[in-house]
Image 1 (cartoon, one colour):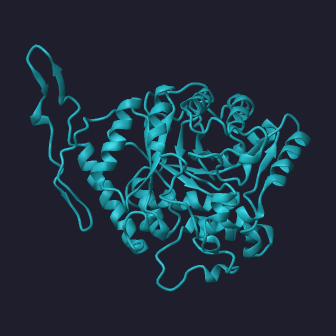
Image 2: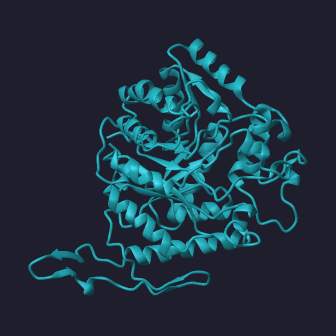
Image 3: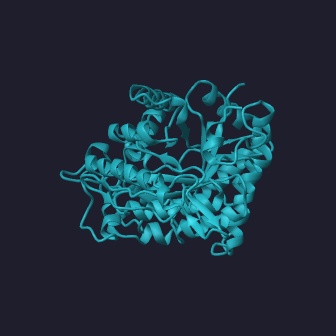
Length: 434
């Protein structure tokens, strides 16, 4: 049976995602930002469209890299987390039965026991639909919000992340599947012989256990990751099941996926266990001209200062002072996200423009009819450049509504995307090829 592509929605717990200034669009809803109904309705919309999952991108603070201030990023409405996604995901779990539910948690600043407890609870509550977007954190201001002066060295952060993953695994596997008895007549609640200490001790991380959360349907939540540096790719090859990538071209996406699959094979892991999902930002129109008009209107709303402030956050540098990518890495700096920098340099190369020009452009929009958007997605998918896509909204919530009503049926008609969910768990749906 031909394999199907996978779709994951990129979310922020605020009014805008990765395309700047979209909160200003007349169709964007703002009055419901802090209501449960907003997030429950969104979850149902994505499930009706048969998305594998959604995940909340998140951070531990407000970026103040551009001009040394948060004025532009905050004042002009950047990608803000106005609520903790761990509060929103249980609401979305209750409103759905199949949609995967992902949260971003840092291995640098969160104890394994707390991570295992949060995600174990979400996996139980959702019936096996939890996902963890694993980040090592790449910005000093986030470290300072967690009581540290700055970040550990980059390589060390990934070494710590490996240990956190191992420690969480030891905790999640500390309960046998049949340990929870709930026998009223005998008075036996749990069989303690089927619960174990973790007793994990690494160089950076240790945890005693046992976890108080019983074994969950997935045991380990589905693992997302976005590392693009050599060490990040090594980590992804070991642990990743959904990889969030931001390549500028199909050739860049193909090179990334080829590299990840080779790394997985080298360590004896089946490459099909990991789905490489580049991000695409779509604008759907009933006709090509309508789509182009909608895209042009979105572009007219973009605040240029917000674009540079957002790019400063992405590359972890004050772009009011830097215009050359060679200037990005200051001596002794532990900050940086390779994927964001790579994408901007790929854009500069592909468009024949300078790096300074590339960082002043918002992300490219794929504007077209359902058929032309499906053409692009099918081309990338069938050429081996990806296993599916990450879809951020341009306008919330209409991007997901229009994509679900217009593009998904076209993908289904071509036999590229599921008509029904195949499994009760997120991991089961990710591994389904039918």
